Length: 112
Image (cartoon, rainbow, N blue to C red; front, top):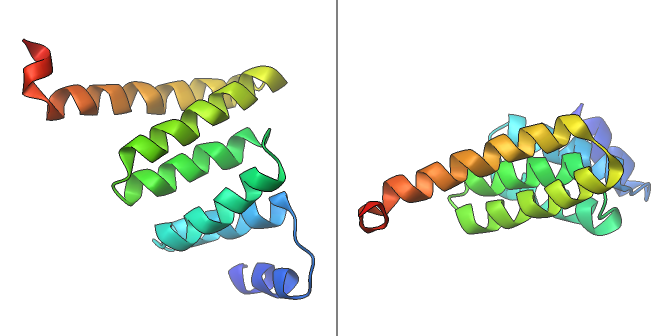
């Protein structure tokens, strides 16, 4: 699948959906840095693409870039809410809550 998507991209058929597909395939192959590049391009081409923002956050999280992941999820949440995408809204809220809990756990001083 990834090879087919890369051929499409090489032929000049670029688009947010194609970039999302490539990002998803690369993330599945445990290549989060390459996935993040394609997902960033997907969100650049379509800033309202909440699923791309959501997956970009996951890729960034796997790269231990939590603050950037959180920022991507917040962008995705805004896009999902604007579109009325309830499923993405729920999923992104779960990611943001997990991120908040992880930040609290990592900073013992914040618990005092």
